[in-house]
Length: 248
Image (cartoon, rainbow, N blue to C red; front, side):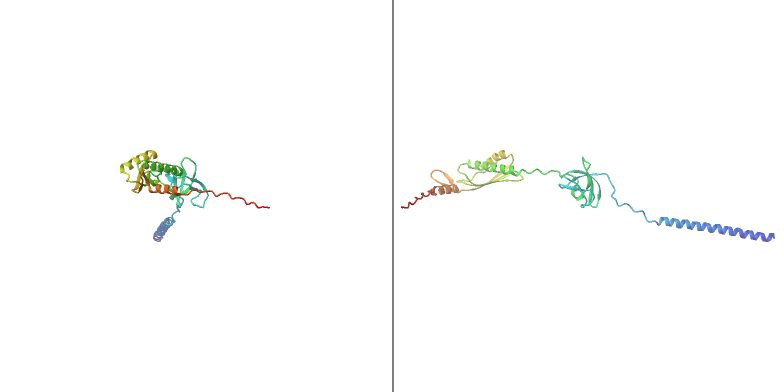
């Protein structure tokens, strides 16, 4: 009996060892599969909403820029911004910028392409009003004609003054027995510059085309007009008609 018990004990221990080994291997496999399943999960979706960042300073690049309630032109308009209005841009979405107007609580979406990141270095000067410019032009023309005709025996046929970037330009067609000298033109420019408060450049197209009489020089134009006036017949009013009397 003792000889049979020893071998039986050995086989029981063998079975215990085999069971333990099987459990260990099975557990390791389960853990490995579980780890693989966790690692195979798809990554979580990232929100597509634009993230807010520190605001950047921009300026409105067009006059009457529309501010919308949402980043699309079909949304409700909130207000309009004037040219060069300072704004703070917080984020971008679909080509629109979310802004806040400086010095107010106005916020909304604007077309980002209509914003500029700095103001023009030299603001455009306000053009002179049409009425003021026309009045000054007439004054310069009259003063220029008077100054030219102060030169002995020079006559102005046509004159025109025009505004330019550098100031004013005066062009005149003059006739006389001689042409004006550059010194006389410079003196006229000085007089007109004091009158206009701006630089004035004078150009005279001079022709030696005059009518000389025993008394004086005169321009062909003035001579022809005077001759026409002398030869115009005086209009004589028609005599009143005498009423016809019928004898009874």
